[in-house]
Image (cartoon, rainbow, N blue to C red; front, top):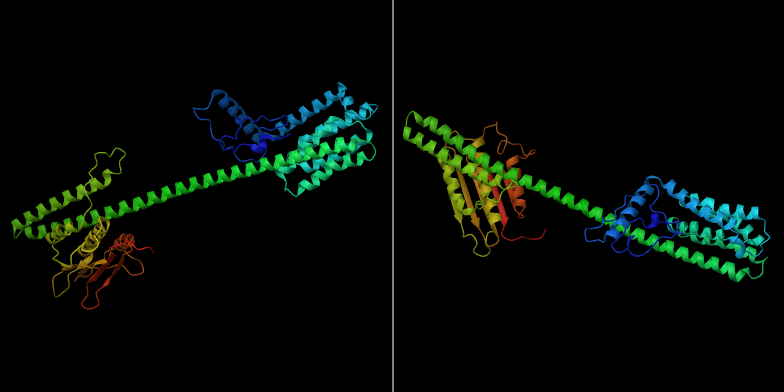
Amino acid sequence: MTDLATTDAKTPAGTGPDSGTRPAPGLSPGAGAGSAPDPSPTPGPDTAPLTRAIRGGLDRLRAFDRRRPLVWDAAVAAFWTVAAVLDYTSGGWRTVARDVTAPESLVLLMSLCFSLPLLLRRRHPMAVLLLMAPVSLVNVWTGAVVQAALLQLIPAFQIALRLPLRRLGAAGLVLCAPVAAGATRIPGIWDQQLVSYLWGFVFVALLGIAVRTRRDYTEALVERAHRLEHERDQQARLAAAAERTRIAREMHDIIGHNLSVITGLADGGAYAAAKSPERAAQALEAIGTTSRQALSELRRLLGVLRDDHPDADRAPQPTLDDLAPLIERVRRAGLPVHLESHGEPGQATPLTPGRQLTVYRVVQESLTNTLKHASPPTDAPLSAAVTLTYTPTHVDARITDTGTSTGTGTDAQDTPALTPAQGIMGMRERAALYNGTIEAGPLPAHGGWRIHLRLPLEDHPQ
């Protein structure tokens, strides 16, 4: 009397078709029109061959029922119609009839009225039960008591399964009222027919509620699994985007800085070639060294992006110990840089490698911007100063220069405050990773530009 459509298996392990339960005739293999795709797991290689065959067959039946629900409804209705007609033609109805003299044509008509409406049992179960109610009254009143009357339990099960539970009371009344009315005419039918109808209704109602609860639970599990899968994919996309941003930022720092140094060295070498060939040779040598270093850093960065990267260069990222070579390269590119340090790093709290890389990249980006975009003042040469201050709780990096904006750049000093430059945005993102801050702007007194990085030495919850 149940439908496999009802348990259509958003089915947890151990409760599927192979769990030992068998459907009775009338059980549908699918959920009807509009049902969600069957999310039941595919049997694994360790499942018994018979179990795999049974589950595969049921899955195919469910899929067919979802595509053509009317075919299964017609098959169930035809099965019970044939059973009802056979009960009539074989005379089986006489074995339980209260009045065997009931007209046979009426018995056949009642048998068909109990079986044919099952075609609509899933789409309109309450209407089917209401249609059967007058036939049930005639059945009891005439004393024929055909066994096909028990088919009323099938739409009652569908009501418990598909409709609001408050409809169950009305369904029970529609099912039992005709029998109670007939009991007033035929003595002895009260305890035999009415009680059996009541117990049958209670059974199918509880069965429908149980199947409905299980179905809702499995649907919630499937929905949660889909949501978690979606969140996992979303997290993967966010992680990929963050990694692309990090790689782009690293390439910007590497290429921008080294090309700026190379450009400064090339311009200085061309200027010195006529007057001091030795200085020009030194500039060319510095260009070669800077180029090789840039290629090495890019090779290390891009090597880890390959699928076959076990041999990729895994040299450590720059630290504070690499600041002196960085400043020396900038000096050789033609920008005098003064490095000053106050305090000792890591006295109370060690400066983590990530924070050291942040300080290094901010100093590198600031000096690169000075090389690219700053023009020397009219009364003095262009210069820069880097001041590092270590405290027990913070590290401060202050980078200043004496230049003026060229008005043609796009990255730092010449960028309006309302449209922050890409370089400054990258520095702010690096600092934000460790709850740090970046302040950037022109010096108030004699011109020039200032970058101030402040990093806490410990992570503090925000």
